[in-house]
Amino acid sequence: MLTRVWSKVIVETSAAITINAQVTEQIKVLIAHRKLQLDDALPTVTQLAKHLGVNHNTVAAVSRLSAIKLITAT
Image 1: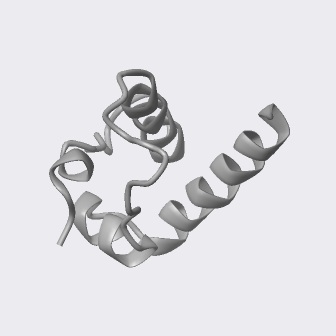
Image 2: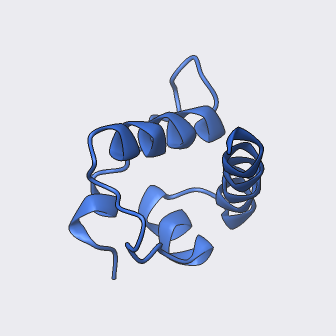
């Protein structure tokens, strides 16, 4: 089950931007508004994909890209 923070992440499949970009931007907003803290548990790829109604590979790609960006930003 997703935490309250993650349950607020949604995607619009008909939006002009990709699902990956939507999820990435929402993660950035959660971090910027301090809704996502350093020690917060992250949902599994499968949990988040089911919640969003998208393929797990889409969420996995977001996870990989986000990790790379976070590592290179430090």
